[in-house]
Image 1: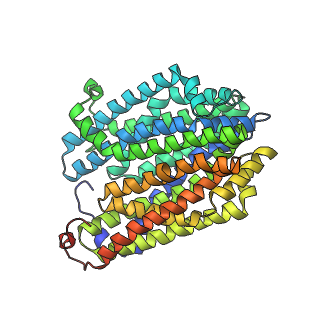
Image 2: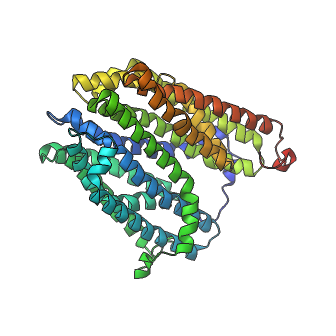
Image 3: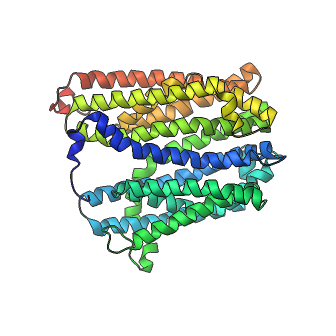
Length: 465
């Protein structure tokens, strides 16, 4: 498990490998998406204030994305380094990286907590809170901020569990947090009358329970990867930290870009549609996020298969895993398109029974996802560039859709339509343009791959393709 070469990646049928590697990722990513949806569903049905409460929750999304970005900065780099070190059977240094990740997560988590608590009101107003939604956003974010170090530690160590060869345990912990959150939410929100604060507390408590088991797991010194029972675990080795943060910088920038985009979306929706428009986006975003997470699960499955076979110079298998993954991703987003256009009413009803909010969210869901079948192609192709080591192109494709295309549309189209409908139409336009750019780069890649026979050195085409 710690040093064996996964030769089945180069020999077993691609269809079987996709099922074997993608299913755990799909379950984990879908569970993560449901975890985020549960709070929105219960909060949206709080008596008398559900519509404003869900709008207040939507205002917190950019701030929570920033927290996620910093958690990713630490967690992804550490998990990647540990995976490589375990493959080299360098357990001593792997344990140092694990200890370093805990110290860094505590540091970044507490720093985020302090900054958020000190300037919470101006931060939330900057992210789109109005006088009506600020109390709800503040009540939710206050508890989330207090538990931020727990959140960073849990998700960071969960990534390490997955990368150290135990994806089923990582998936099980994710399912536990989803299930326990779904149980605690109604108890704290409705039975104990805690409202939106109950939803936040349920989230933190679930992560604390999962983190407790995770720490117990890593304190077992019989495991090849474990924490030393010493105060040294809290000392940061800045040489290790530098390498870890460098690896995590790409995902960090992409998460940060998402935060910036949501910030401007909220500001434009507040300007042109008011508080309910922000709440409608919160609902639409949760529904769309579910389909995106399923595709990301397929991408997780494709990554080791494509990467291994590219390294083994089996280009036929690289093309096959890409085509099969793209087909599944397209089918998933086509289902999302069907739900968005033909079942928008029932889907939105899960989150709210407020007629005004329901109408806005239903209209937004239809507009936002009217071309979403092409999104699967864009996501999988972008991931393929990353699988083949072309990180710059992957980051460019990820960021261009959000920063180069979506942001200008968000500012131009509402002024053209003189309503918030311009914000909703910004999404399909940017998706279409981004897909064209992705197709141009993807065609160039596959022309080169198509000219290569299995066993050829990529250098014959002038270096890395």
